[in-house]
Amino acid sequence: MKNFNAEKKRYLKDWICEIAVLLIYVIALILRRLKILKCFDYFVLKDYLSQTRVDGIASFFAITIGIYIAVITVLATSEIGISRELLRRRLDKRLLYVIIGGMTENLITAGGAIFLPINQFTKHILVIFVVLSLISFMKFIVLLLEIFKGNMESMAASMDEEERYRDTIEAYLKKIAKNSDNN
Image (cartoon, rainbow, N blue to C red; front, side, top):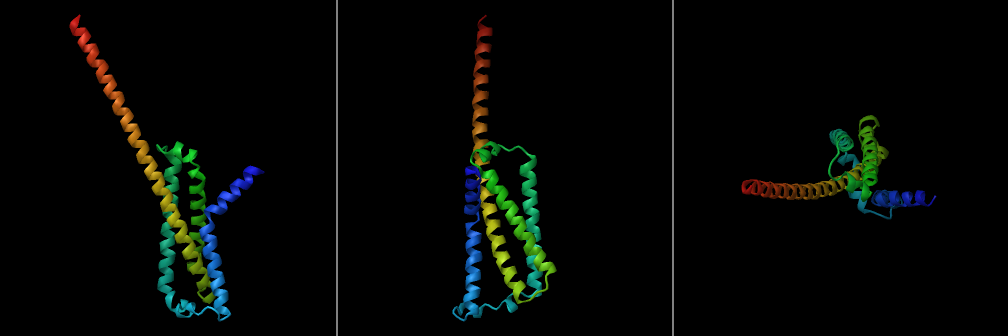
């Protein structure tokens, strides 16, 4: 049970930014409806989210779904130098959560842009999911950069070790050659 609670806390910690954005947006909409918050009056979704822009949103998030799938396929089918480090630092679960959450958000965003009739309510839903999807995609890019950095460090260490091994073998071969010349 303790491990389950720790897992839940880690999951919530990873998604705190998305939850905060969602709450802020909902509170701002409520305040706008109550005529308390007037800054949204200048931001008219009807003008901003034209059909062309909604089509572009659907295309963009369909492409990002492809990026998620491509990266997860590469990571799942290849053994990279950072795999052990990923598992040790528990980045594998974080990456999995970000990919699954990001793909779900992107599917909802692209699906909503394609299949839902465009009205005021769906435009607000689209704005929320566009922002959430972008946040998840940024977190995904940050995790990929961490993996890339770790992989480069692992490759550098491996190359140094290989070079030391070659130098050692070369030194032994020189000793053997020198000893065989003396005999």
